[in-house]
Image (cartoon, rainbow, N blue to C red; front, top):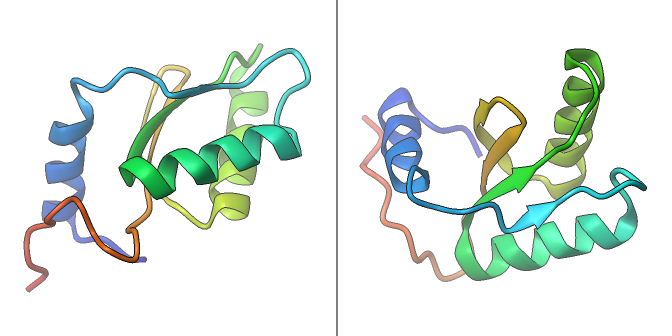
Length: 99
């Protein structure tokens, strides 16, 4: 899903008060982690994922894999916290209209 700048700004504001729902462990990005991310996205639509990566390159690889596999939209990456959005079949978050 392609979001406009206005929609991304709105989602960043909504995500500000959220706590990370999923955290990658020592095993990294596994099928179990992907299942948790998809489950959380189905419930909340907008989530934060904590990624304890050693360096920026590793962090980028994790972010790309998570976005690709979950088919979610990357809203923001703050430090080691990724904000993801995926609209549910019955949307809970009312996005601003795209022009």
